[in-house]
Image (tube, rainbow, N blue to C red; front, side, top):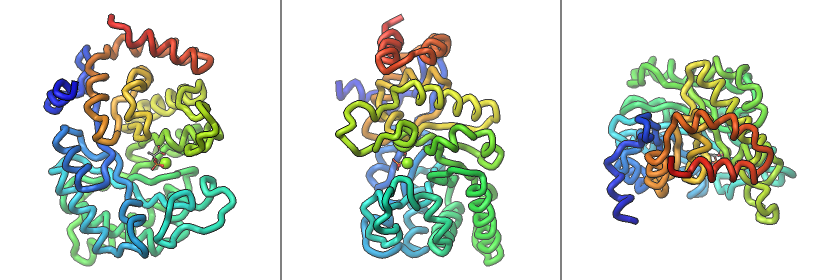
Length: 325
Ligand code: PEP
Ligand code: MG
């Protein structure tokens, strides 16, 4: 079994009917990056920069961040790297001192882009480090917890200012740095048509999207099986987000844990998803699942998936989807 998986390292992530699905990696550490590269990931689809902030007291300065982002870009040797701006909040063990303490509802509080826009000094330092790293290979910027259009306008304005200043000071900067949004707040998913012209790509964070959509804490075991993407609301919302992205010609990926579980691969493909981002530890399992699926058949059965009325209905659809043709 391990050997059989190992052989897939050099194989494409291609469905039985010949459609290539892009598998990106969620990678933070040096080891993750090396492994993602070796497994043939299309690039890094999610680099959580909290990694640099949470493992030490105090804040990493521009140089420290620059070196980390540059090494990430160099490690992927020309494959696209997606750097997510800081997503710290009182919901994460935070030693940087950035997050507010004693927020009554940390998951609904000052986290992600909200925190970045309230600490522009910290945000600008991070953007400068990312933009400087763009001279070393293709990278793009992903903004977490986007809720409304004004946040994207603010980020784009700050980013432009940073780029202009670095160029004026003689730094090499990529000609283009695509800007994307995490779709993980239901408002952003539902009102995606109001945001889509301001973003170059999007990535669905199903970990938070399930949490906020179902009002179910992602870390609370007492909720049993309530916390799951197998809810008709989640299936419908994913369908709408992917369709809106496609209709506007914007690349869309799923980067939450849903993408890392081969059980859900048929669901994501049936809904039209062509890009996934997941930790390298299950990348080959998902590649194997993709290679066993027929995309044409899955797309034909999407209406049946959207008609499922509960988890059991989604599970019945899944059981049918994985029957050999
Ligand atoms: C998500 O919310 O699905 C996600 C990928 O981001 P994080 O798990 O870091 O919140
Ligand atoms: Mg998230």
